[in-house]
Length: 456
Image: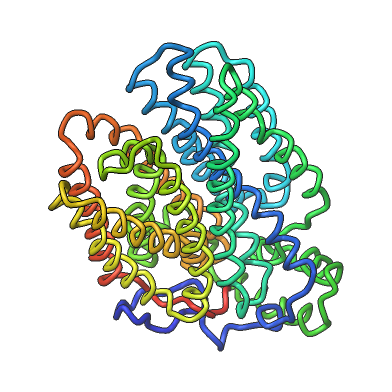
């Protein structure tokens, strides 16, 4: 397989591509309507994930009162979709490298639609747990497939921006859920049922819109189906040099052994796998834990439930950070953005752990900085994983990293309310600060530079 240049981290482990010397006309093709379409259709999983997390955090207190369960079930229900995302990401990511991306990408949202609609009829927490687990499996499948397809279709010049835009849609979904959810649950009664079921119709629309999406030409080439890959490129309006350049990629693919799942942990890729798992978890564990139980955290820093103005400001910072993150991804290196975002996050969260009784005038602005920076930094979660691995391991690698991050997120989400109840706010924030510090250390040691590299 073509080897990458030494990364800026100093590591000599090979990457998934060979830089400019490995680039084909397909990597440098002009941006066209299909590139935008495949990105837009992948928005849906990220929007759904943000929306699902947002609505459950708002609806849980009302559901708990009506169905009569305590903090253990609250933690399990908050974590259920995250556990499902782990299963969907890892299993479907592995499967997509073997049977192809297209069919799984087309129909995984059917599961989300059916399970979301069924939430309207739940009568107990166990039923709701199972349905949210199924929703998570569907979202996790798309987390493995969506970024993989976007990375494999779009030109490298636009890859970072389009992949990062997927995370913006997560934030849009979360913010929409906040405002819509607060209005719906304010209606009282069992309005939460309509709120939980509300994502079923958009999910069904996604299934219909994805009909006709072609298979990834890079995957077809990696599996030896050169003529099918050429047909896909021609169908999408590719020029003859793009079609011809696939032959060179096919010859290179035929000369190397086909990668296996265990290669993610072998000498060639273990550093990238380890970095991806640690960096991803270090970002999303604090993110999911804090924002799933945002009212609890805000109450600890002096922002009461009645302070809807502060809630609104926080959500605007969340959305603003996500949009600003697109600029950071475009202007900064992958390695630099990862390291410096961890530095700022630690600087913002540590004072809340060390001085939890500080005035609200200090803690709330720090929390806004934390929110803005975290929202900007997680744009990398859709960019980095897809650039770390070669085509025959890309879906598996992306799925593994997404899946492992959601297991960490599920554990953090389950433990956060228990931790706040039993050991208090300060030790809980200190533990999350330590998680960020581990992410910083792993990034300094292992983060490769993958911006604008040509994928194999």
